[in-house]
Length: 169
Image 1 (cartoon, helix red, strand yellow):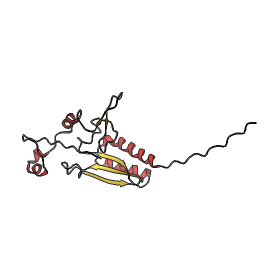
Image 2 (tube, helix red, strand yellow):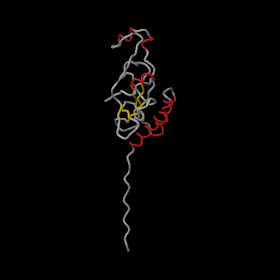
Image 3 (tube, helix red, strand yellow):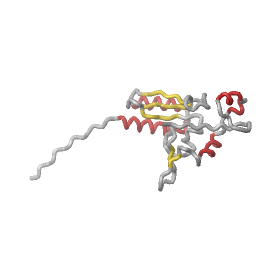
Image 4 (cartoon, helix red, strand yellow):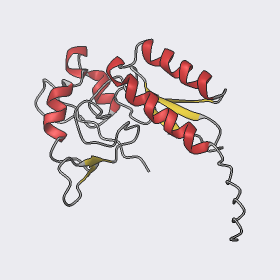
């Protein structure tokens, strides 16, 4: 199942452990550190890194990850705006999961999921409009590629009929 990781760096010396302590802090110190700083911290030591032999680029097993490559651009832990596509449980369409801009300190509650299942072209058009409306335009092509791959995988393939063998004269 999915793991959640949240690093809180405060202006006050010390670690913040509970939500009540976070709410008691002034607004400036409640904000998360920059995505670049978080990436530098988690780049080498993350439980989601999957290294293979003879493969230069390591893989990532993060939830909502689009390409499964361990890189800053597609990292779902450090960015505020994250959108992911997953296959639906009923094999009809796909589930879009987006990280909410609120509830930043509650990783499980910050993910909004909904299913789109109204035909291949219509679902991809809806997804394209969702990404255009404010979620990471640089990840638009990766989101659409993953969604179309899920749609292709759900199609049932018709087995080709075997052609009769020609009789030798």
